[in-house]
Length: 376
Image (cartoon, rainbow, N blue to C red; front, side):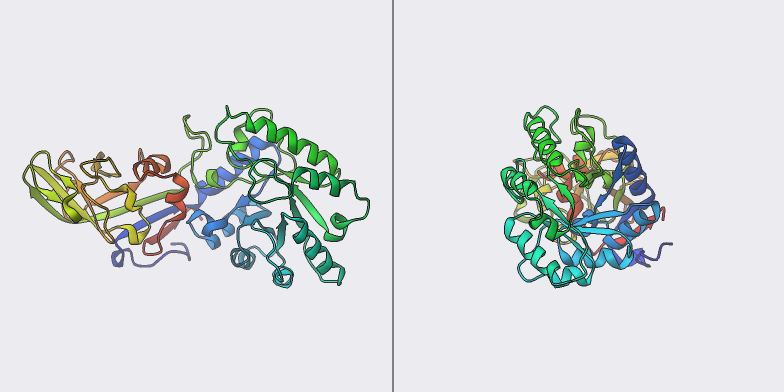
């Protein structure tokens, strides 16, 4: 048993199994594909699986660079990876330089104001880690304009030198769609930026970027979703190993006649005599309410005895009803396991059933699950 395990699965409605060996395998595979150093994006509690176990496993495997969204996440990552470089993607909030320095975190600077504030802080003699410079090549979300980045590169001893920049980076907007012409435009724009900063390491590839043609790997890549088993090549076979499995148990079975209305507001009607199983999991556990299956729309599913069975009615706070009429009778009974993520119900399938993305399924994984870590 890992030290990260919740000790008693009987006290919880569902079990979340997290395969840290698969996480490490995915990281290694992406690094080998890129032919350069692969970092790891561990924001959003390492996409829901837990920052501490994820960073611990990846650090032991040799990962040296981590990316988080918030300072609070960086502090948690630093506690288990004392020698790593930890970048905070969301930038530098006013007056926060000292906390970055205290925890040896590297801000990703995305505006001229941030760059000047960080440079001024370093000029006081503060012991601060090198920052990253984010240049926006398409997103219009965070980052310097390309022209601003090129102007800064032309300065011989300006803010870039004062800020101690150690990495220049940009972020893809559509890399999961290989046919999107925006990818080629971003690759070309960033090539100009990287060339303007000779001697500075550069980073462009996210998860799907590893599978784009004609995309340089530069010195560092930043996989996120693919590390956790998400498919970086939508519409094609998933090249990554699954990391997360979710299983609940049947708490009650009942038979209903054709025409019976089920769940809150009777939004699902049995079209035949049906066998229904209620399981101990709901939207309070992070399973999306949009996975509700009603008379008007399809929704989520569970695997019972090897058979994919649709939900019946609304996903409620703590419970889901599953239509197990077609499942083997021996598997559809009180106490038997029901899979919500795993096998044919991969992250993409679960996301589609909930009318969302696999990203949201991962990052919404609830704290009420009994978490079982394997492979560490």
